[in-house]
Amino acid sequence: MAITDLYHAIEAACFALSPILKPVVEKQSSAFGLTTQEMVLLCVAPIFEPECVSASLLNRRSPYTSPDLYRKALENLANGGMLSSRDGVGFRVTEQGLETIRKLNQSLQKTLAGIQPLPITRMMDLASRLKDLADAYLETPEPPGNWCIKHARRLDPGRKAPMMARVNQFLEELIAFRDDAHLAAWQRYEENGHAREVLTYLWVEKQAVLGIIHQSLSYRGFSLEDTLSAASELIRKGWVSREGDLLRITPFGREIRRTVEATTDRYFFTPLICFSTSDLEQTEELIKEFRKGMPIMDI
Image (cartoon, rainbow, N blue to C red; front, side):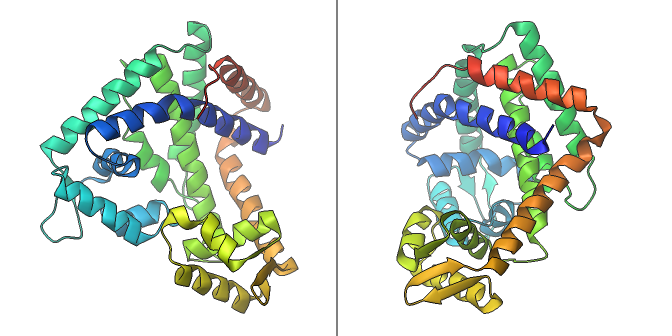
């Protein structure tokens, strides 16, 4: 089997869960006067304890989003009483914030409890298999390490949670380890997360004008000047060429991006050598069955 097939099955299952979970998060966010992004950041804040959550810490977890966007969201949460801060940089969740998180989690678990894509014994088998994969990743040394998945495990709702919630948790953990693998794969080549994403955009699209690239990635919170700076660095390295406003990925740039993807796949696969090919194939098929059994909803 190709390990990319297993990951694609995991990714597709998570994508199928999104239109079920997203409306719940949006409804609860609105009820508490928060944006969806603010609610998500509030919910992940406790996983970093005893460290305070900060823009720089969140940027380490996801370097593709502007630290300024994180900073603004954290400050808004503090102004709303969900977080507290003494230095204006690091934040901790308040009792009000914890209560908000509890109510969201209750709504999410109630929603998940009403869905059963597979017979209960198959669901139990799937949850067990996914946890075994995640446990193997939690023992992974550097590279790539397990910083992302280790923090994701702290969101585990526990054995008493609905089976769907357990499956969702372990799928999220596997996605988190994919992030560990991808972040580690980039370390030798490029530190700037925005530059990485600009290169990836051109890797997919082959060419684009700077303004279109910036517009497409605007949800990340970077300014046009930031995008120009990232593109300039890629041009300096010879990964991208420029003709007027048109940017093209070079053969060297394609090779760098291809190498990063291949390294990511290798990091993702290596911890699974303790599983037989048969076990992994059965897990993949079970994930696909789970995906097919999910209700079809618009996102």
